[in-house]
Length: 283
Picture 1 (cartoon, rainbow, N blue to C red):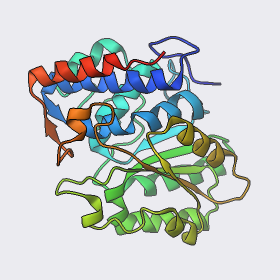
Picture 2: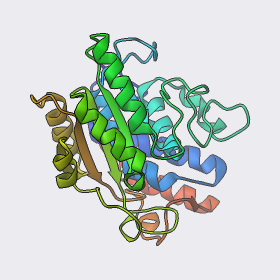
Picture 3: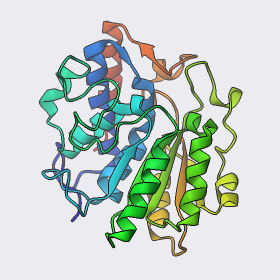
Picture 4: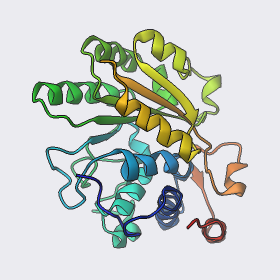
């Protein structure tokens, strides 16, 4: 079964889906006045491709056994995933105003027990790919044809547990596992390249035995092609797509900030950001 239509209806373009995900994220961010909005804006394109091109799921049955799984390893990216789940019709749009509040189904860090469509509780960082490996192996043993997509960050490539999972996936020939690395070159203390980002390049993953691609993560056509290639690759090996993304993509005055890992935005700036986004609304 293909994905249901989401809040914009059927036959909607991927650029419009990505725009809606960015807008949902900005509206949630405005509730708290701060947060991981830079990641949400940057990852909107790869999330649009995931939920409105690549994955099979049922919006009205998030636990459908035949669904493709989307594992968010990066718990603080929850605002980005909520924005996609709202657009997909898995979460209701009217819950945007509850983001980050007590008893909300959308806490600031993602927790599977609270949120429909949130498959795992992400963080501490470096655990998501290991969980995805276990899930992909389990699906194979049950002869379930579903895929497991795991979104992880460039910072997680400095975790030893990630590379243990990388090797395990090759050992088990998990061709139903697609890792997606959001490489935005930003961590809490500054650029990832100044920390420990070794392994953010496709050749290293390929050397470990993965089918590896590296693309501009804000180029929807390139991302779509990479997702298709990953799903249809004929060899019995896991697949990875490294998506080079721009923090705060689509909001120029936020893109220009030196540090965008966790940002505070003043009330008038939220209005300015939404206005800029609306000016560039695609068909």
